[in-house]
Amino acid sequence: MTVLFGWGPMWNCHSPSPYVVKSMIQLDMLEVDYSMQVADLEEAPYRKAPYIKDDGNLVADSAFIRKYFEEKTGKDLNAGLSSQQRAMAWALERMIEGEISLMMLHERWLKDENFEKGPAQFFMGIPEEVRDEVIESARGPIRQRVDSQGLSRFDEGKRIVLFDDSVCALSDQLSDSEFMFGTDPTALDAVVAAFTQACATDYFDTPMREVYAKYPNLKAHADRIDERFFKTEKWETS
Ligand SMILES: N[C@@H](CCC(=O)N[C@@H](CS)C(=O)NCC(=O)O)C(=O)O
Image 1 (cartoon, protein in one colour):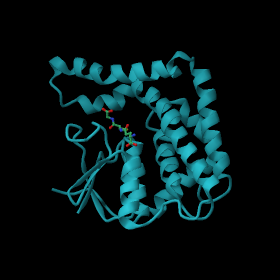
Image 2 (cartoon, rainbow, N blue to C red):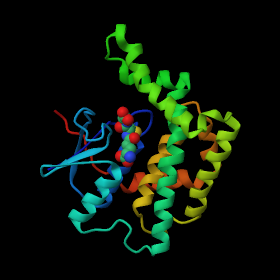
Image 3 (tube, helix red, strand yellow):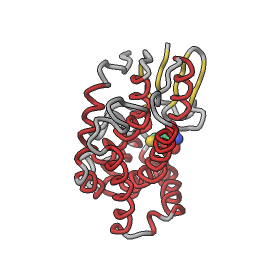
């Protein structure tokens, strides 16, 4: 019995967390039979989702979840890629998770209007007297992280220049292929599709949408991944 812990559809995305979406797609790619439950960050090894429970094993972080199931199933999500393509795949994955994800955090968590209609909703169950304090304890570290990396010290124009360069790199790698490295999906396709959905969702008012609109092959790619995976309902009904 395999359970993937995360959060369900929200903000016109399969999950508010693109890392959860990445793992959902990669588990589907590996043909793992799994169900989904809501994450409890108190039990999550790094206090982050996604994490999985499988045959008594607790594995956290989307990269280690993939490795665990590749080993268990004996399948390699990058089978067929050359060592140069594997290097490119890893570099692009880390660019997405290091650079693009920081921009996503900035847009969702640090812009008040987006925060109110988005992440603030996570805190609505908290008693009103302490809610602001709890919100600040979550928002403060994100503000600090985006600041210390330098992104939020730029004006919006400069942030977008760098973001556009990253998205353009993904679009150029995809080119007019079906998937990032040709006709078969590989591990990177899950990451690209998950973050396209997260950044280009029309739920938030953000210039990330206009950037993605410049690269329609990425949206078509995300739609292709959607059609191919997500075939069965994974959320457990209690
Ligand atoms: N490196 C992790 C990143 C996961 C991650 O950042 N998850 C976020 C949701 S998008 C989270 O759980 N945040 C809760 C927190 O940091 O308190 C992975 O690949 O799984």
